[in-house]
Amino acid sequence: MPGIEEFTFGAFVVETAFVGDIAAFALGDGTLRLARGISVEQLDVHSGAILAAAPTRDGKGLVTGGDDGRVTLIEEKGNVSVVAELPRKWIDRVATGPSGAIAFASGRQVVVRLGDGRERTFDLVRAAGGLAFAPKGLRLAVASYDGVSLWWVGTDAEPVTLHWKGAHLGVLFSPDNRYVVTTMQENALHAWRIEDRQDLRMSGYPAKTRSLGWTVKGRFLASSGADAAILWPFHTKDGPMEKEPIQLGAREVQVTRVACHPRKDEVAIGYRDGMINLVGIAQEKETLLREPDGGPVSALAFDRRGSRLSFGTEEGAAGVIGF
Image 1: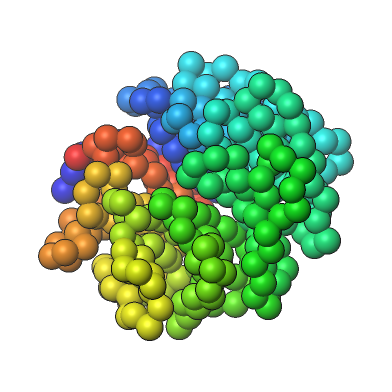
Image 2 (image 1 turned 90 degrees about the vertical axis):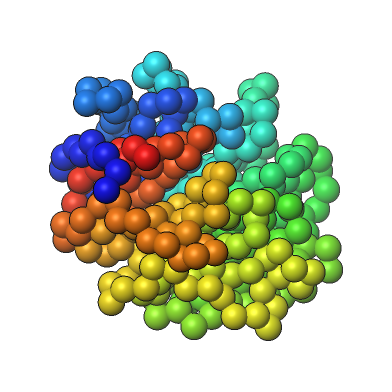
């Protein structure tokens, strides 16, 4: 089994990411932990809980939002800067984009802060359920009730609206910018092909899907919410339409998190009992990365080289696995 360095933080691990070469862990108690080998630095970034976190597009920082109304940016050296502060608001959605752009949401208000400091505010009819920037260009997807709106944040153009009945909780673009995908309140995913707004429904999950990831070149969309990682094919003309998904790492335990290797056709799979496996897509070869300990895996992230995997659990366990 690959080498593993484990930590005990005692608080729900909301998100993990590599900030430069440092493994970062955003915790529900409002702190951020930076793991440099066996040494861990604690940063008190929020006076309340961290509700959302996302790495910057260049991999050199981590943006967090909290129930204290603050949006912060943490850098590799441990520097913390306050991007925005909205008193008496909960910042429960954040996203990062090109050229240092940051988006964050509180209720029905979405704010985009560009790298040069300019800001734009979008007022929605319903509360924002998820935010995501397109792979190229300053286009922002905002998921909410009954669909997704696509905004060009550098212009005053009206948004493109993609309709599908129901509550959409999370959103992301495909790497080729052809599709936008949402997680839903019901046990399903929904997608649209942007060029013609064709609907694509991906259902059959026994639980809500809370974790998504794209494999190399966006060939498959990996997802949680079942007793295996569910991978939908997106490398053909019509994407997953009328196609069966691949199932990886099947166990009698629900998959809670997935993370796709940045260079290989492999998926790291975290389970409700704390186990983590690495599974190849073609041969379905499984490598055990972590034994189960009873705490559901709540966060998973590869570094840019794919040589390390950081993880966290709902019980506050965390660590870095080296390959």
